[in-house]
Length: 127
Length: 126
View 1: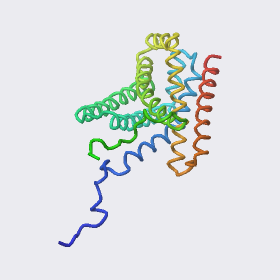
View 2: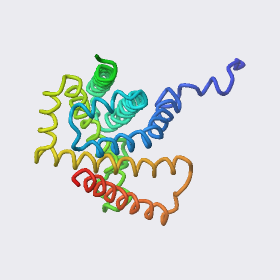
View 3: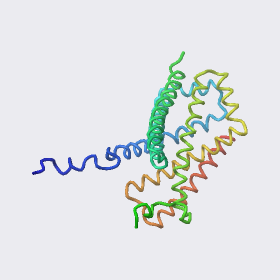
View 4: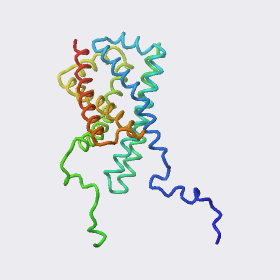
């Protein structure tokens, strides 16, 4: 029988990842974002090593800091999810445990990431 | 050869450790450590959001002897993963694969991440 499907269509989905370069690309995208963001955050923490509660709150209330912190949290938790998932895929061999731990990881990063976002918003927008 | 006896790769235990392989597995180890360290970030932000007293407690805890040791390890893991991550980005762009370059960039990662850790703590403690 003549094949009507294109060559590209025939090979799509055959790779073990099933999703092409999506995971790989997002890992790199978040990595590039984290280079300046994490250096900025580390420098901020170092300069506030002795700072009291009120100066840290004042720092976080600056709109620029709030936005950069939210960007940092997004990139950080996304990058962590992608990275730890690869480690789990490589080292956890029992299929049920692999799937369970990947699901748990995905839930955990969303819960913890949202918790960070809410904490930052509470400080920066709170009365 | 029966299928079950086929040689499997990679069997890391049979290889002599070399700079490139040690740095590679350290990248993973620091990545996992930093993932666990995110709990510290959650704790710090929650303490800040809870108010002055809770934040003061968190500062006391993180400023204690044990807290400082954890933060020291955490900061080195961060700087190492950051530097080696940049090395990976160059590889992704197809650059630096020659053996000599890979070793040079590897030693550079070790030196720069150690230097950044020392610098960060020198400023923080001054």
